[in-house]
Length: 155
Image (cartoon, rainbow, N blue to C red; front, side):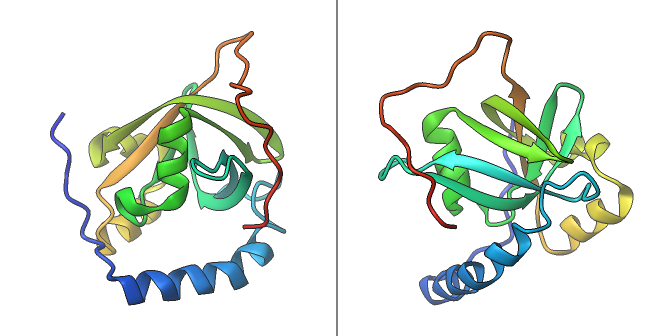
């Protein structure tokens, strides 16, 4: 599959501003993300690829069959994305339920479109999001690797 180039390119200063804003805003968003009545935002729990700690990141996501699809808002440089790729798994809380997901795969707009309402797809296109991450629900009996004992870290 040919991968599209994400239009969102941030320099070091812009990335620092985004990280600072996320440190302030994410704890507030985590109060509503993943709730039964919140179909737009879920909580992605992922293991840090360097620290081994568990992080909770509020993220737009939608179910699609036995998988979940998430827009790659900041492309391949997003820490959550790099952590999920490195570990190969994550846990999402969506509409009040936890799902263990495995097998991260980058997909294009056409493959992701059935998961999202039209108004969200238009917004993604307007800000230049062309790539999405799809993760499938882990098979029954799957258990996460235990090479490090994770600690829950603040986002």
